[in-house]
Image (cartoon, rainbow, N blue to C red; front, top):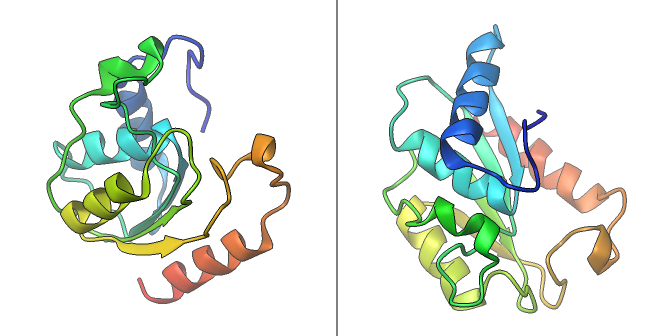
Length: 146
């Protein structure tokens, strides 16, 4: 989905856009998010009653880190209640936006299965990722269990 403003994101706008996109889908919904999008899903889930089958959460951005970019700090605090759908949280031990300790904490709080990719950076193109066959496999596995 396309967000209105990627440079100066606002959580209410992102959550509203997510809710609108989910509402527009006639069938079962499985969410896939990267970085700040993962936090938007957690915020959305804290207040929504719309059904979602599951979510693949890749490299959530820790918006509460002392060195988090100012433009994303408005997404704090990170909601830590259990998500009401199955989730896989994919993290890296060398992510500059999320320590593995915080990834483990998010996974535990959200009820997510944690998958560590080892030293994979922020799991994006800057970290050397292009088409991500393993990510597609994770999504297929998630969908087959929803």
